[in-house]
Length: 210
Image 1 (tube, rainbow, N blue to C red):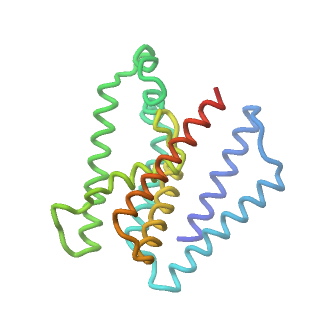
Image 2: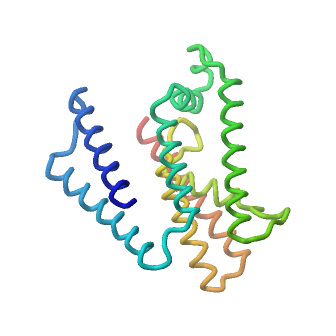
């Protein structure tokens, strides 16, 4: 699996480089490109090595990787993904360009519901129990993870990979605060402050671009 994932990443990255060169866009020097590929592939190799030598890779990790690959493709390649970015960037402009906003929003809600169902099944399977309060107050973590990963609350920007990285950051923060026996009230305060900082950085970055 590690060889397949690393090979696919290298292939996709090189194809993106050649496509940018063909279109006349600037690209990194070949030496820097290779160095970046080697570094990222080494990190992925270490990750898979740790998972293999410990207790194997959990099924939830495999599900996340599969969903990340599928949704990254959906967000970048099909018309559906590009229309969603257009709606997020400027709904009025998207409507004037002929995009059926209500239909696309309905499809997005359907996709979100399917993902929530998958998350519920995995959560229940890991705990071997189900409660009506499972996942309660997880909205703050989800929003903070998305914003930390580069998703703009103003709409039109964000990637699947960035959201996953943001989720890893929030999970590491949760585990760290739990190991420190920090009171849950302070945990929510810290998460809220992190979200505020991330939103401020997003707004400041947008003003700089403008």
